[in-house]
Image 1 (cartoon, one colour):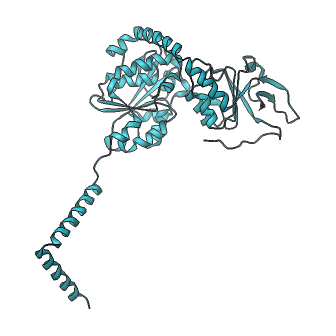
Image 2 (cartoon, helix red, strand yellow):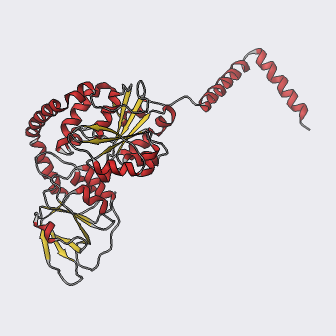
Length: 394
């Protein structure tokens, strides 16, 4: 979608707004307001982060690092381009110190200027303004270098399997929720860019089949937005701003906190304690999304439907580097039981409803009447009915 034009403080060219400066995206995102200019350091901007910037309705994005690193074809810049959000990258680490948080600035031709209302304005940082042609050229170059990245990925996957073999192969350390999972269909909802659209497609299935719904992070609020209560909520202790609302947490029967190996997740656990929520814990370096899938697998789910997850090779690669190995191995673990949400409408036509039976019955009666009507007995009945109706008329 293309965002509406935002007001500027002068008639000078470019895009003006309030600078929100923070090195880490996960700290910056909750602070953003519509019309702000986001200034962050995020090499190879991924799709999920870019979508959250779009959802925050920022006026522009300034990246200290390159938007496309060249190591793999990340999808974030294309998301910003489609939303009509200007981008400047490569301004250098000095921009974080040189730009005051909360100050009005203006972006023009790759430069970040103080927006003081006067002609020009002092340049406080300079980089490269990205357009569609530049992004496409760099993504094409990155695709040609994927072979090297895949070799590194193979090595990382082997190391991850060695660390997490008890969890992945034997389910050691996976908590047992109060929600019954064995033999049931489980829908795992991740906080991906297409989650709302995919949940809309699944609404008939969710209503008629009543599967177990496992929501990851803020997707619990999205699930409640379509009128469904999540049965299990998985929270990532490493992402405090990804915790759903108190209403979503209290509505769930089980809350599971994922903590990294050797970490306590104290901040998130304490916040849950204050809400009166006593969470289960799973300690793993796998992502929260993958921990939710492993929870369904360990519970012996019949089928697992993934909503808002990474489906293509580019989407798979377009995420945090540490999460690649866990995503790959988790999906191997679930195997044929894992189904993408986009496939469900093609495989499930819905439960037979009373009006369907009524239509079949009416069609059968019409066919029967037509068949009887062409017989001698039927013609006699028709003549008698006609005489009776004529007698009733004045």
